[in-house]
Amino acid sequence: MAHKQAGNITKIEKVFSWEGRDRRGQRVTGRTIAANEAALRAVLRRQGVAPTKVRKQSGSLLSGGKIKPEDIALFSRQLATMLGAGIPLVQAFEICATGIDKPAMQKLIREIKVDIEAGVSLHEALGRRPLQFDNLYVNLVEAGEHAGALDSLLEKIATYKEKTESIKKKVKKALFYPTAVLVVALIVTTVLLIWVIPQFEELFKGFGADLPTFTQMVINLSKAVRSDGPYMVAVIAAATYGFLYAQKRSAKLREWMNRMSLKLPIIGPILYKSAIARYARTLSTMFAAGVPLVEALRSVAGATGNIVFEQAVLRMRDEVATGQRLQIAMDNTGLFPNMVVQMIAVGEEAGALDTMSGKVATIYEEEVDNAVDSMSSLLEPLIMAILGVLVGGLVVAMYLPIFKMGSVV
Image (tube, rainbow, N blue to C red; front, side, top):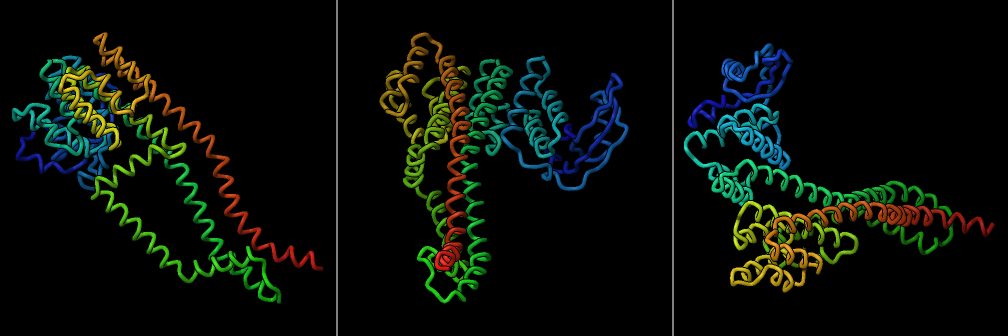
């Protein structure tokens, strides 16, 4: 299992679920990766577990699901707890791997463990896996190793990951809700135009009179959707693909999109506050880890999640590198509110930049949370009005000729 050498690690591709009793006689269960059942039972016995039932699960090693940032945060907190309790690093990795149910995460942890057993430092082993551990994570771990405070740094990393992921989820929630409702409205409108409106059209043919202009416009729209619908969908899909492709290739387009997103009504303030929250949270974590400010700002720039803020932080880094105070560099960007600049200034003066940055992050994380809740309350009547106009407009258009005939009679 985990005690195989690097040359055999690729052979560990079986996932086992097991049940057993620990040293206190309590029932324990779990899922573990092992080369075979015998190796699994041997490892469990070394950990004080007497296995009573072992089952091989179908599927490959990677069927355990995609590794998410939440998994990395949980692993970081577990590893910090183990190291804080005085458990050696290699043994701590083995315990963490055994306590995690996701096979893909187990494999990742054991691969890192094999590297460490081969004499590689922890930050170097993590740096070999950039998809799961970014530069910020690796730099913080390296600072913890050099300072001899790896457990406390991992605790800070876990808190940082949890906070930043929470902010990302709130922003996604803010963007998803109106988008989902508008998509549903578009689907309902399309269904009405394709299947319902034609039924009224057949009915109106026997009226022998001119239809109201609004009704005729809706019928013409229905005909266009039915005849040219596939072409419309193809054009929209091609335009969307072309836009996304251009956005990936063009830094100027991405910058323009990021800049425009900050100016959007309702959504813009949420994105703006979330960028400040991530800036402050990352700065607090890096500075608390003892990373020099100039070096920390490079990682902070990439963590803001917005190109406008990223470029501004990189300019700040250049100014700080020439001796400028962080407060002045922030003020020169014109992006940060005066309250944030003043709190950072107080932190610089008092030698507590990490603490003040953390307070800024907490304030803006709460503001993002409140803004998302307020936006949901504000959008509900607005979305109902949009649905009413779309669906109600089609219904009214179809009943106008009937009302017209009733008035004539």
